[in-house]
Amino acid sequence: MFGFRYVKANPSTYLIQYKNGKSTREGTGLTFWYFAPSATLVSIPLESVDAPFMFQEVSSDFQVVTVQGQVTYRVSKPATLAALMNFTLKSDGSYASEDWTKLPQRVVNTVQVQLRSVLQSQTLQQLLQGSDHLVQVVREGLQRADGLPSLGLELVNFAILAVKPNPETARALEAQVREQILKQADDATYVRRNAAIEQERAVKENELNTEIAVEAKKRQIREAQLEAEQAVLAKRQAIQDQDLAGRIALEEKNKSLTMLRATNAQTEADAKAYGIAASMKAVQGVDPKVLQALMVGQADPNVLIAQAFQGLAANAERIGELNISPDLLQQLTHGRPKPAAKA
Image (cartoon, rainbow, N blue to C red):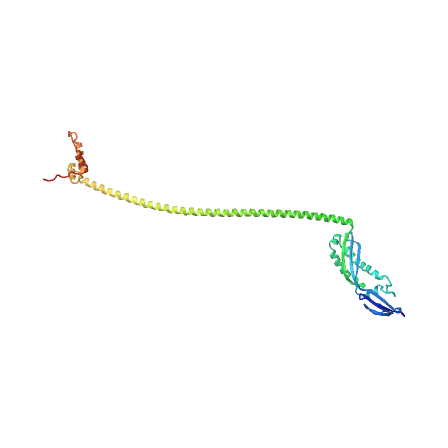
């Protein structure tokens, strides 16, 4: 009515009122009356916006790569964005231009510029294996002053969902990776077999070491037994040597005793021979009959009887007949006849 209108902005909308080319009122969630013929309203949404993207680029090894991802941004400096793009509202509350629809594409173009510089500096395999590095580099590029901040925007999130080569290259890479996987499987089989062989060798070595240790213990036991037997034999030999030495010493003493006895016997025999020789020398010139007569008183009766019979035997040719009664023979053999009693 009369050109006055009422406007009410939500908290996520930054509203700017211009009059005569100058900002007279601005802020979020404003509510006010304004005079439409002389005022211009600019409405900039502050919500975060998700802008998906997918485009093809060429890697450093001239392979076509398809990159798919999403960038999330929000307006941080509404005045800067309002100066670059047209967010003016018409009288019915709609935008006067289509710039608000072009902002996501402009952000995607900025992302593509950052991605292209990175993709062209890396090979296909590096890009397929290093998406995290790619995200980090692009994120840093978007946050620089000539990136999103130049549009009055700030980066909320950036993610790369997929990096894909063309189908022919993908099949070739799959074949190469498949061969590598098969080779790794073969290597794992060989490693497992080698590990089993090494374990078996270790077990056999342990068994052999155990047998060697057992044989060494047996040898030590046998050596100890032999040393014990040797010690016993040495003791026995020492005892036998002592016994033999004792016997030798005893024999030496017996020899000395025997020699002493022989010497004594020889000395005694020499003395007796000397006495007999002296006696014989004394009676050398005496008649034997006189000697026999001298010996009659001292001779043994049996000796006298023997001499009598010897005399009879010597004069046997002169004796005609000799009778010896048993009583006489018994008396002669058992003793001298008893003397007759005196009257």
